[in-house]
Length: 169
Image (cartoon, rainbow, N blue to C red; front, side, top):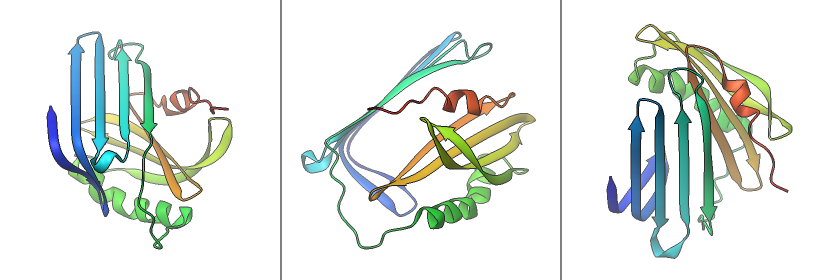
């Protein structure tokens, strides 16, 4: 899928893109997903690649996120980490219901992420009888809110996936 001159948005956050490509290649034993985007006015680029090997057995996940020269406009309307977590928790039941998850249990927990204890939103629920486990690690770094979401089904493997992240030094 290729998009020229589009918008990527979530809630009130919109990013104008000059070009975006989403590519999905899948076989029975492997899923490869890549997303590449160029922001308008040469304000940077983003590349996200994810691969799942053996999705029906061992579920080996690998991938990368590359953000290059991203320019984000400054704003005086800065949200605290706790306000962001509260707003996310408030929006989750509606968002999950739109995905067919009606029995979700939503909570917060401290998790180890890239060698540091971080706040996370935890979600447990089911969709069409299949259990779903999710952790959203959230922390504020300078003027940016960092959110890393990991979701697994059948077994709660979210902690083992989060343990794969390491800090870049």
